[in-house]
Figure (cartoon, helix red, strand yellow):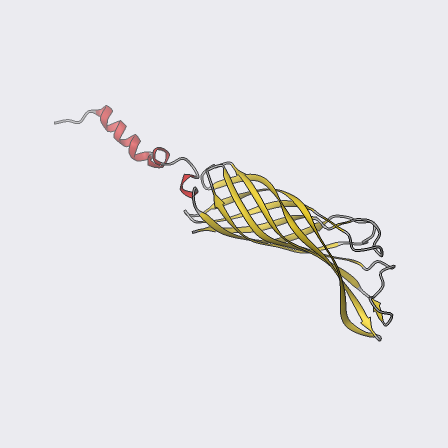
Length: 213
């Protein structure tokens, strides 16, 4: 008995497009926690008190949860660093300690973010933002009795905000790689020797990897 050509065409269409009928893009990632890490460069904010800034390194390590196709929550440890000219009016903690060389400014914190995702299959762009508690540290090189190699620090801890945008490429059900732009805004007060508030934030560009459980 000859088959019905309409039934044959319908069967061919069903075989050709099972993913579209079975799952919407990104649905297979919903409900899964994931680990992620990022590494990249730093463009620090400018401060009149800290001349000639040069960005060093940005790091992020965190845990996330994909609540829906469009929303993910993340908590992370984040770090970025820069070098600046040591302020001329900055003095050592004791009379026999003299400052010298370039000063390092580290900003390290615990942050939480929300990401709004466009689920487009393997390629997923997103935007987001959040807040964190950041500790900023000025590590100043010093000479003690004329001998170099020592440092002393000035610290401050403040709340900060960040916004982010990026895209991930998924190569399988669990893993993805991507790029993320992030702007961190956080202030620090290092005492009367460095007058006014220091902007310890930066613009970051991170290469990221995510792996779902």
